[in-house]
Length: 133
Image (cartoon, rainbow, N blue to C red; front, side):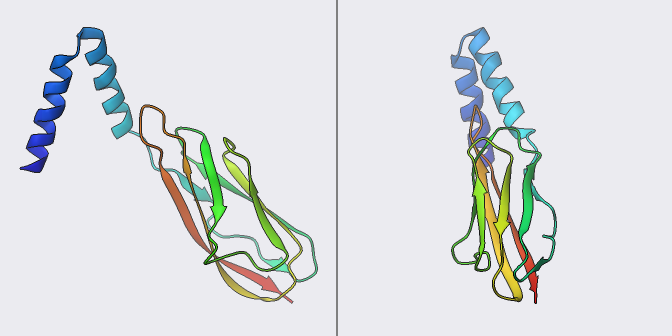
C-alpha cells in the first residue's frame, strides 16, 4: 500500500510540472534508480612489515559522482605508524607510513560520494590488515 501511495504522489508531481520540467524530473528519477553501487578496492590490503615504509592505495570504483570523503573508522583504526589521507573529489585514498607493531588488525575504511540530482552514496569495507615482524 505504501508503494502505491508513493507512485501516486510521484505521478501527481510529474503531472503538475510543465512538459520540460516533467521530462527532466522523470529523467533524474530513472538515472538515480539505475546508479551502480560504489565499491572499495582492493579486496585485501597488501601485507606490511614492521619498520619498513608502506604505501597502499584504496580506490572507489563505480562511483557516479566524486567522492566527498574517505576515512578510517576511529573504532577500527590503522596500526600505529600508518595514516590514511584523502582529498575531496579524488576517487582514491592512500595508506602510508611505517608500522611499528606486528599483528593482525581490523581496519574499516568508509566514505561517501557527493549528491547531485541524486542522493550521495555510501561505501565501506572492513579489511584484515596484517603487519609482520
